[in-house]
Length: 179
Image 1 (cartoon, one colour):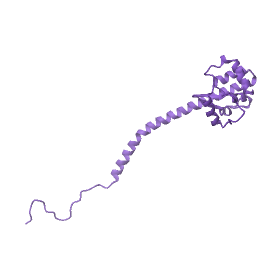
Image 2: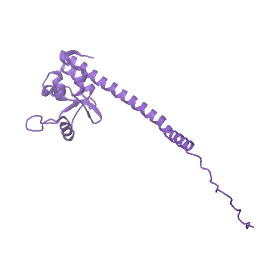
Image 3: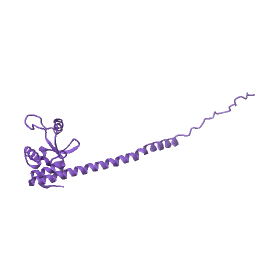
Image 4: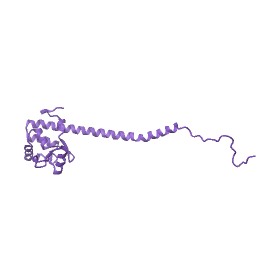
């Protein structure tokens, strides 16, 4: 599904990270998408804090930022950020488009929402597949013992019968002396 502004959800999905069990996007990545500087984006958010409750946006702890930075292979050298970034959930990213109020922001907001929706659909598909595999495993798992028992029975049928061997020739019964 192509979107306006030349962006497609698959490109945007690369910028979505899992933090505190939520799918979020970094303020710097959203600034690139919305074509504004990161500081401009953060200023707009701070001017409209009522629109960004904690479930829409939160600031990373230094530990979370260090962990994410190591995953993203971002330099921690001189320059760069002086504070941990803000991250935005799907709703927060959409709220940004209304706070920034530009045509670009509106277009990007649509792409971001479509991206989050596609990720949710993929996750639900994976959950359904996992449930089907679990059901198949339970069904087939019980058959393993039955198959093993069947193979044992076939092997027993294939084995030659064990017959008690009788001695060859005349055997004198015990207890009767010979004449």
